[in-house]
Image 1 (cartoon, rainbow, N blue to C red):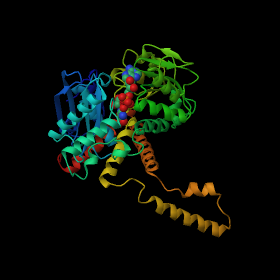
Image 2: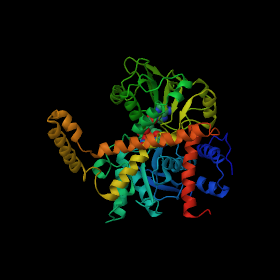
Image 3: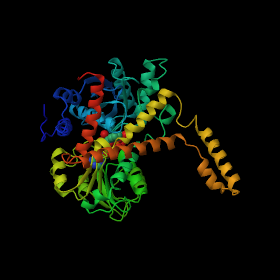
Image 4: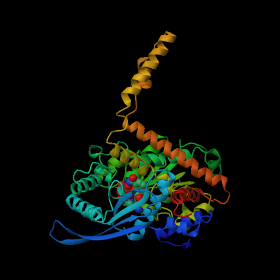
Length: 474
Ligand code: NAD
């Protein structure tokens, strides 16, 4: 069953991308259909007693897209526009994303239709705990079943509430901590998870920009140094993507938020803009920068790299002809519509697709899940042993050569890895390996038009292999 490639619904768009890749395979139609459909969809409505005494009905969803591997995994989104179609699209993307970065989970996603700014912290806690209780009732959460994480509008605080609610309902469950990831470090979280998606965006972008033969047709030189970057959305993913790109030598020419954007072709200091936003309540009127309203005009500013890191459907057929960036790095999920993608491709723009580029979050979530199940922090067991082994080695070299290493250098070489070192190195390795897998698929097969199709094709083949090896589709 092919999806309409001109479809505007987010889920139909994701399915249209799937179909485009599926058409390049010769898997049986039934197998492709099984990979494409959502395996379980749970819609729930529950009451919230607000602090003014009124009662409001809250709508939420959890979609488990693929049970080919368990647990399933995916973030929980709090936003006023959340709907079933969106959650299904995001859940499907999670299946393909996990496959691309070899994270052994099926895809899932959750959503609660609320505008977080309209509720007190206490009300948000009530909503989160009740939503979790609804998931527990239907066995839609658990370390071996379905493991949520943060997404738009949620963060470590909400994950701590989820964990606490789950443990209260499952007293004595020794692996309860692994029921959700993205928790605060003090609640079983892992160092590096908060910034993982943005760090992964940076690693992916760095890898893409290192390919001289891909950058030449864009009129760009290899490397991130000096590249002009616009970032849409200064939340978790946008802030960290901007910050790591700035540290790598990019010039952050514009940052945008819901109520406006700030532009300075000479470059913005990301932390200074965030400080200004905190102090004044808006990024508008940042000293030395031009304020741009309406905010989405920021997408059309002159730059080399555009990083949409807010929500879906931001680059559309309407504004795509005016996008000046040569690279669109999709940090958000679904920021480019299918129609916009066609226009950008015709204009020779390189799109680094969401399904690969923002996979850093789920990669480090996977590390957190492993940590929770093993009940030991990464690095704890081996660090001292490695340090003394290196120390003995250096001492042997010193004895043999008769020359001592300078103290600072000795300390640098001998230092064993901490949790954060191992997390970041595992993330870097994952993003680099996955980039080359999808790039090779794109470059080797002339029928593959772009990186997105390559990414879907790589994912589809991995999921299909799992089904075939299970013997379900002889
Ligand atoms: P977030 O809530 O931390 O931040 C999003 C920011 O975007 C907010 O500050 C919001 O005000 C801003 N925003 C909304 N509309 C905007 C607009 N039109 N213009 C400019 N700014 C706008 O959310 P997040 O976790 O950073 O997620 C952002 C995107 O990244 C989403 O698509 C999400 O699905 C995706 N993502 C997140 C993670 C993660 O680990 N958090 C992982 C993978 C993908």
